[in-house]
Image (cartoon, rainbow, N blue to C red; front, side, top):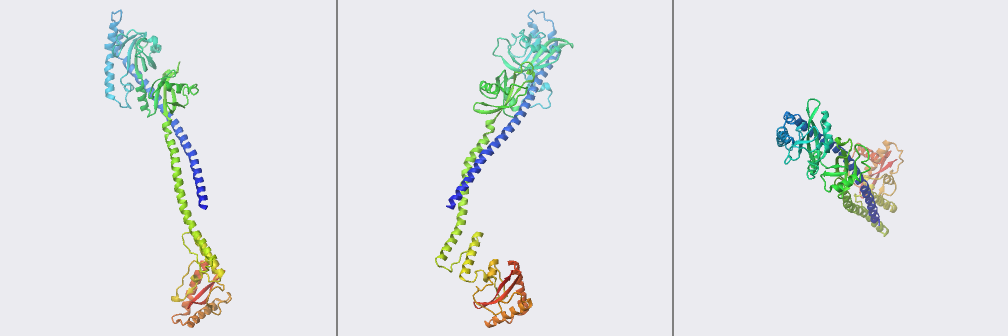
Length: 512
């Protein structure tokens, strides 16, 4: 019954501990992971902003380089005597911008995938921009790089992108365009980072505009994600994702811009929030392009962190608790049962001994195993009690008696109670006269008396005393008196001479 109770109690304790661990540890770990994810997402969003700004600077610097090219300026201001200005289109293309096609291709081949740490701003990515064209001072297209663009010239680009003509003040600008070569050309429609640079004749006269653009597409999102060190990236306009590293842009758009409508309502830097997309939880941060924060503030990017993947560790820990918990319980129960068996077995032996004594075996001696201190003390106490009740000599008295054989003195552990009882009459044998002298007997008389009694007892037994001297006897007696006083915390120890089993021994009598 005891074993069942102990096992039940241990099981309850283990279950309570494992439940507490299950409730507290995974939750605490999840909170830490979420907090870390928010911090890392904020860093990634800032890195992405800087990355996009560098893209803006890169395309704008390239546009400025082309706009400052004297060949382009000469081609734009030359007289062509062509009412359709076709020759002007060819001249600007051949003499003004064609050389830049080769310059960009060479730059891309030279830099490759290297990250330009010390490169000039115009040598930074994008190395080979997808959009390069020149328009006149009214925004009418003149020439562009690329194939089959000869039918594009004279298109009124300025009407579709009026911010292009804002550079008439001589200051370059950048922007985000949804550009197509013509109004009806839907196949070429795409989003671009654009840099717009004025071609000036003198400090105030605008003679043309150069536009350089970098395509924003799925590949751009992947490159951006690698640049910021992982995660997912998406680009959006008016609440619609148009490029991302994830699948199902339409579903992603709804999750972010409908599910996070309240979070996106205020401020240029909305707080991060969580969404559910394709069965996974994402933590998202929405940012707007700095070049579009003016009128519409509708175009930007989203940085996403997959929380389902991050929290997978928490789920593994929860599963491990369910698996490891029962294993720990089984091991503990096994160990406890072994300990209980070892502990109880010792006391079962004591119980059997008690039954032996009750049955009439008065000579039964309780065995001292030495494996359990409590069991050892109980066995010793039972042996003492049995001897006391039967009037026998105490089991441990003989060890404290001093035998003169070889003049050796041996002392084993003995209780204080046993020492006191040892002064009583339970010792078998014949005590010599004078053994019960008053303890106030002077020390010198006591020593002489005990020596004389000891010598007389040995002579009566026919034992030799030729090598026994008073000084040698008293020296050994004093030595052992001190030992017993320290051992049993007695004020003094006197001895009496006792004859037992054909031997003469000195029986200690403590004074407390």
